[in-house]
Image (tube, rainbow, N blue to C red):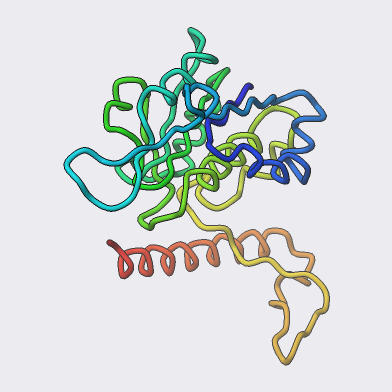
Length: 221
């Protein structure tokens, strides 16, 4: 898979490439990256301007962004804008995006991007109902979530039972020490009885899912 980041601050992604699963995917050549700065497509090296009709803040101009897209877009490319109007990102969408050979992720900044951008993208995605300084962190979230599902990056069984895979939250997990500040690991996990352990994990997963859904409802926008 090829992932292209369109951003005013491409250096923001430097550390993202150097660690953990993303680094492993690069080393195994399961993914490659491009970094495109819209400023390189502006005659004055500037990609933002004041807003027509007045208002505070600056807006990213349409021309540098579109030219940046066109400089890398191919027949099989899928163009995504990170923004608040998009559908909330979830694991179902991650699996859907995994099928594309080339994904272009556009990071907004300031007051956003000239609204004519919607004529040049395939989809807008939001990573949550809150405001961030720019789209770089959301772009990395999208990339990371997809990369970990690519072949040969992590073992398939490692993510089959993760939260959201079966519309359920994972069960609780424990490791050493056996007792920490008066709280001990559930005895069933020490029993060696795999049937009972699996039963406990299933019940605990249901409990965690119920709690998650309740808290999500209480915190709805």
